[in-house]
Image 1 (cartoon, rainbow, N blue to C red):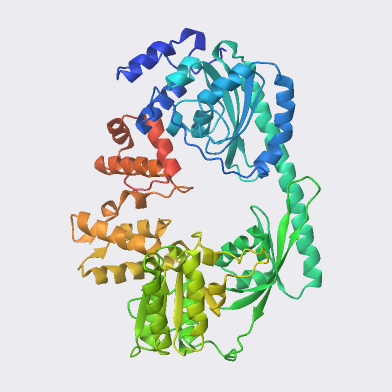
Image 2 (image 1 turned 90 degrees about the vertical axis):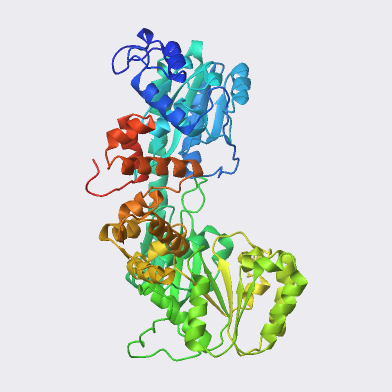
Length: 607
């Protein structure tokens, strides 16, 4: 297959000679290889791709009824019928290059693709297999064609391929790729045109499916508003509709909780939900059916009603100010609501299940609340990690502290306990349910665990242990309360005993970071900065490289390593991108693209 390049047609190039020289570390004449291919080879070498073996990771878990698959199926059917009997293969992947469908019209080609792992479940991202149509199109964000000898891996050089990106029509975000692969000697110029046309057809179907679902969701929302006195929320894949009452009631963390309920059909029947500001709502939901197109429910319609607490009357005046807790920093509305709710639960001895992402400071918060409400009473802590090996001894210690009928008992990491120990713990909790002291159980959010699931009946009932706790409180992640970061920084530095302050640039970088590790990660980052600072204050350059960027997606271990290397090279060269690229052995175009992809921000002086 010949196609024009930026300088000359493919027939005038010599990629075989260029690849050999590239792998030997020699200079590559511009007349020997296309510029996009050379850029991809450089990325492949930077990622450490093996030029002689295929090491594509495998993960067969994916949704066969996703919007991408639903939209693509008719297009794939039409093309595979047209290509039947030809030595060509039609492939659909997700945005990461993981193969989701493969349609092959030639048995020999089918067997060869199996041999090189170009099969459903395997990832053909560039970072794993090097230059190829799928991975290179995903990296460059545009249609890519790679011919036999242009592949970085020796194993791929018997085939040629062309791939085009598929984008969400509404957001423009890359959601998948469509690829045509053939034997090298049967490649055709039509492959580029075919994948472009197929990608456009799939995007048009995505628009139709999305529009139909959103129209159905809007109809249900408007109709329900006329007949309901409750606050209303309608959720679709990428849209949230809320009336004025629901908008006032819900915060970002509440939106996530509602999406979790909608994702699990067992969670839709009427139940209570504790909001991030400490209020409780009664939740009732139902599915909104779309058109009969096999794409599943169009949306979920959720009604919300505030529940007044029976234990104490709701004050007519403004609520009393929330006291500041020793060792706890942060005064954002979401965090203030959590503190207020925990203090109230501790005062009334209301058993509380406290969940949140790892590192949000759940234990420190419970300890501070105990110290504020009942500072002279005992404070006993039992870690579920100890119950996995010595269950009998651990359960006996838990029972003894609960039977004391005073003070606070904290059960940490219950998500680590096996189901059998949880059943035994339920007996202990049942026998001590009348105690007057506070009991707090701490869970890591989203960690697979028997206590986080229902009882297995499908009726949405919680596990017996979870049912023992009358209140549930979620500690918001740090990314939802970035206004608290300056106060947290001051508190953590004081806790370290360090006589040091953060410069404004460092504080801005800390406030922009996504904080997947929450307060624990912030604490570790400050310790890192203290050890690496060269002056009296912590500057932005003293922070871990991972904090100087803001990627648009969770990074793999390899991406994190690559990001850190780029940040360090930029710091070493004073922000000079050309110098950093040269030291890393990559092109200036590549480092500019990576800086954008990882959201690297080093301040106004970087060039």
